[in-house]
Length: 219
Image (tube, rainbow, N blue to C red; front, side):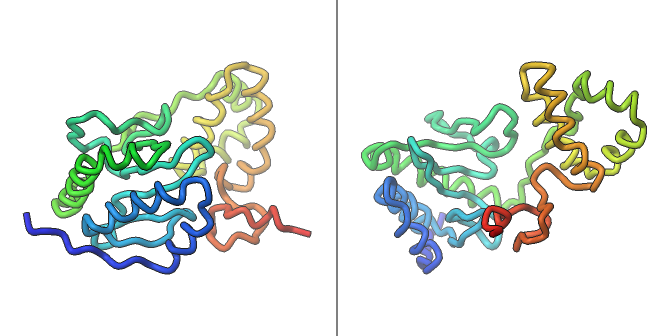
C-alpha cells in the first residue's frame, strides 16, 4: 500500500478543539492519527468528522467521562485486538473506542492506524453495510391505541420507515407499560403532523428536517 498523504487541518476543527477543555489533548492526538492516515476533516453533527473522498469513515467527540473515536462501518472491520465496541444496544454499523487518557491512545496508536487504513479500504471497494430489515416490534400499548384510533394508525403508517423505527425504539425502551403509554401520548400530535421524533417542530432549525436545538434560544 502506498503511504497515505497527511491531510490539512481545518479552521472549523481547530475551533472545536479550542473549546474542548477536558479532552483537548486526547482529541488532538486522535485528530493527528486520522489526518496522518489520509482522511479529510470537517464538522458534521457538531463534531469533527473524517472522510475519504466524501464518504464518512470516522468521527471523534467528547463525553463527560471520556472522549471517543467512532467508525461508521466498524462492524465490518476485522479488529484483531477487539478494541471496538457497540455504542448502543440497537446500533448496527458503527463501532466506538472510548479513551480516558492520552496514554491509552499512544498505546493503541498502531492499532488505530490499522483501523483507519481498513476504513479507507472499505470505501475504496464501495462496501455497503446491510442494515437489518426486520421491523421493530410494535408494543402492545401502541397496538391498543391503533385498535381504538384508526386515524392515528394511518398517520403512523404514513411516516417513513426510519421515522417509524425511531419511535418504536423509543416506545419499546420504556420498561413499564405506563411509561410506554405516556410516551405514545406525548408524541401523538407530532405523529399526526407527520414529524419524526427528532424532526424540528418550531421551524427555526437550520438543519431541516432535523432539530438543531434552535428552539432552546426562543426568547
